[in-house]
Image (cartoon, rainbow, N blue to C red; front, side, top):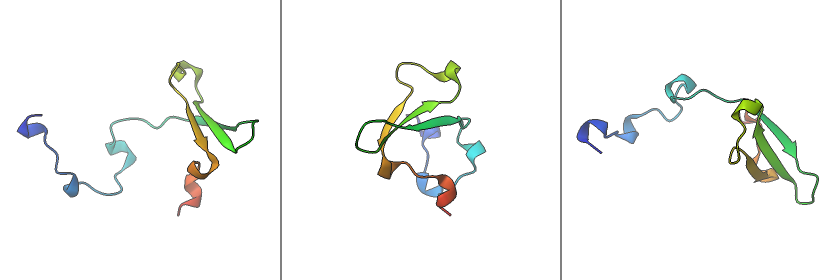
Length: 70
């Protein structure tokens, strides 16, 4: 990494504007698995973004509604 590419992470805001992150948010579908254990499967809502590795399997403690985090 060149010196011009070096970033001082301490100088960046802790809660950046989402437009400053360099990507667009993606709408997701969250489905609770039918098996025991309270796991969720998270997939892109738009099938055009779905590929072999475009999914998340998470336990119930890892899935939180952002509206509940105020």
